[in-house]
Length: 299
Image 1: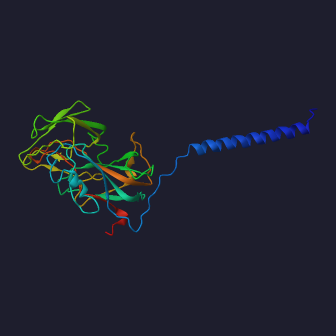
Image 2 (image 1 turned 120 degrees about the vertical axis):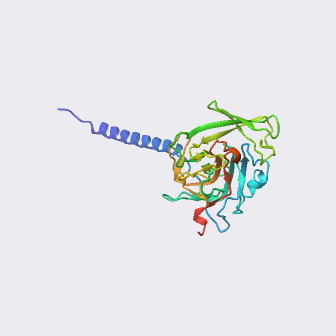
Image 3 (image 1 turned 60 degrees about the horizontal axis):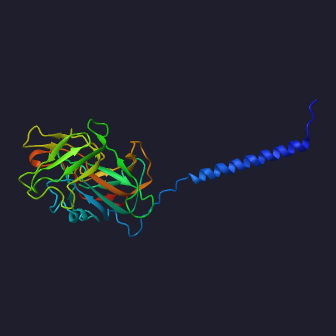
């Protein structure tokens, strides 16, 4: 027969209970330490505007409208506050960064904001759209950019982590040489219609590099050089369809291409997506005419 020491059992049970409580406390502390704070949401107030109202960066690629009335910082500022101005972003990679005075909430299964351009029937110049949350709540676009994918994502020629280096030409009116990170080279070609320098006057060095996502040029038909068309993609890009492009935040992906769930966004970046010379029409260059929170528009 086995004899049981009741006092020993009581002490053992008490020890086990204390140990389990301590382990539970440690797990809770560890979990709390690893918790990421929720992204701050800036609510809509009576003073909030539907349209982007802050210009944070304008960095155009070389192009036929650079250093002109629709290719400079003044033109970039004209796209704010619903003024419906227009700015050209130049060849591939040129971009603009703007912000809202409130957080645009991500409404499931619905487009959340609209980006304006100057696309029309049979002619679009699609721009890749990036979004950012003001995670650190400092009012500046210095957190993480997320690409919003569109219908070109799975087409041949879609390339993430793409970059192009543009080099200052030998003369102000010479075509601008470029080289990409795939070893390809070419020129942003000048034409007879625009005789000002195509290399941005704001660039102080002899070259600069732009990074982003390259969209396929398969939507362009230049078989007839006198009538070149550039069909719109189905969805997801700026300067893609007449009247503006409605954009869904649910299409955001991270740097590895994985889908991310964003509660809302505070800043957007629009970037020329196609690298292509369109003959007498010049380079493909996305135009940006502003953006608005769809939840605040009456129509």
